[in-house]
Length: 189
Image (cartoon, rainbow, N blue to C red; front, side):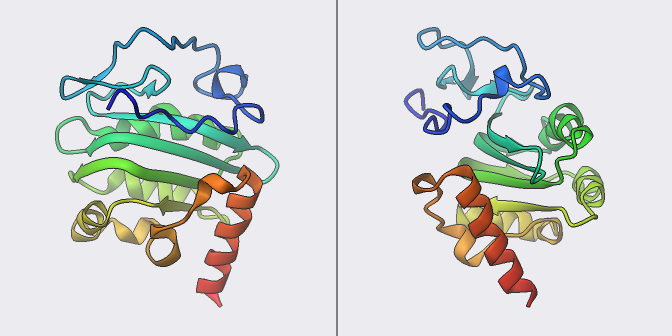
């Protein structure tokens, strides 16, 4: 797991630790000191600790004019034990919402499992985005999406179809956003 780095090809466009509006503003990273773990497996030091023992994130890009954020995740999304959605929502998403962000692209290729608790934070996040906002689950593993569906949380997200196998790395952040908007608009029409 220590070799899985957050996507870094957009760092010349955006770095959360250099954005004064970011909840990670001012964070310093090491390339050599591995201190964070998921189940005793060290992870790359570029991932951001959100207070969970099993879930880490990286805000890859934020566009305050278009009101979207692209966030990559790694680990196990565990609401049953760690209440990861509460940590994510209260400490990070709420901060982005205050800056006007209401469209979220969550990249879940490295989310290995999901364990449900209740839907209150998901419902709140969904309600916060009601004015033309949304939450997209991009490239989540099939069994993780099935767990979201089983927990009846799929109502709060846009996922499936083209979003399950989207080659986002070959695009710029604006192109990723534009392509996802096309997918969403096509579904609505």
